[in-house]
Image (cartoon, rainbow, N blue to C red; front, side):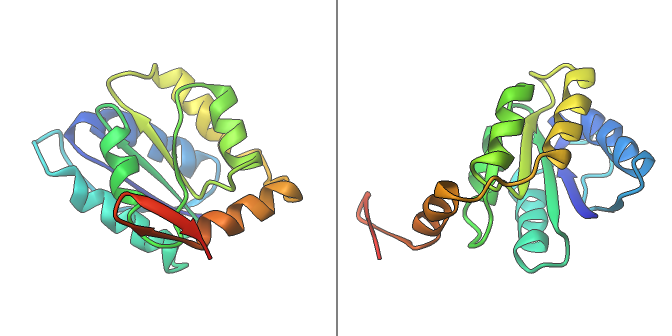
Length: 153
């Protein structure tokens, strides 16, 4: 599977560990930065990974910042992205099974690296369940946001 990965300085160390894991699992990894622990602005890497997934250049993506919150906000601004912030194995599994997540977001400062590796494995192996969940994904994809409210179309 072709997977885009990106982080800011707060997620750099974990990104490197996850990148190595993905390569070891024989995935085609596209590293979109950052490339050192020097301070960067997370929206740059978040946008690049999200665009890569939304365009189909990569099948999935992994984004890591200090908490994962900023990356998930940025990624979900891109149409076609369902970025999910996960903190444990259960949320990683459910993000795929129920939400068809295509980008996994994690916090490099809040998640143990060994847990993060297990989360990535679970997230990659869990298929989307479909059924009633497909209907809900279609509803999300059809939302039109306007003035702090939304209507499904």
